[in-house]
Amino acid sequence: NKIIKEIKVNNVEIKLVSGDITIEETDAIVNAANSHLQHGGGVAGVIARKGGSDVQKESNEYIKKYGKVETGNVAVTTGGKLKCKYIIHAVGPIWRGGSEQEEKLLYDAVINSLKKAEELKLNSISLPAISAGIYGYPIEKAVPVYKKAVYDFINTNPQFLKEIRFVVYDEEHYDYFLKEF
Ligand code: ADP
Image (cartoon, rainbow, N blue to C red):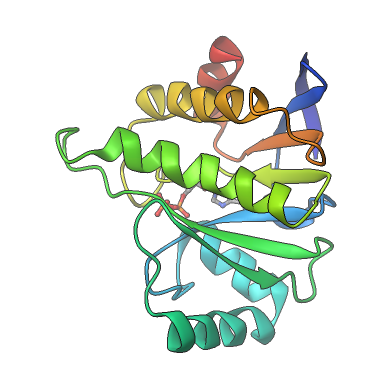
């Protein structure tokens, strides 16, 4: 994947990269999951296919044990056959026009992913454009929320997480990321 922009905030590197999140070699990748962790379409489908059957199997075990993942929360599985150690499955909100707490729920999905990575003592993480695909969150509204969550997280002075990468898959998304960061 190609780095399109790199910035350093406090001691943390934020990198915008173009390409496919499933080939990232960070300690964790974030999946844009649904509450039932059924990884059918979108980025989730690609992650589950390339990760092999363990990813869906572990997801099913998680749901059986803990129940569904509420919007804004995360669940963790191994990376299966992917290069990453973990997949952090983050559930973003479905866009319903903006008056259903979508902004807070998207913020939670991002910051909870970062907090989980820190809790697991990981050094690096890659995130996709959560909610900005099938879930319909307008990209121009989503990117400022991603940024706020990342900056707020960095302001907690993480000890472990030193590299946060956004993997931009849709070419139409590049400009929004570049302008915001
Ligand atoms: P959601 O249901 O949260 O909207 P989607 O999977 O539909 O999740 O889309 C989230 C984002 O992931 C979209 O912007 C889409 O372009 C992007 N995406 C799709 N495939 C990949 C991939 N292989 N790597 C990174 N991002 C991807």
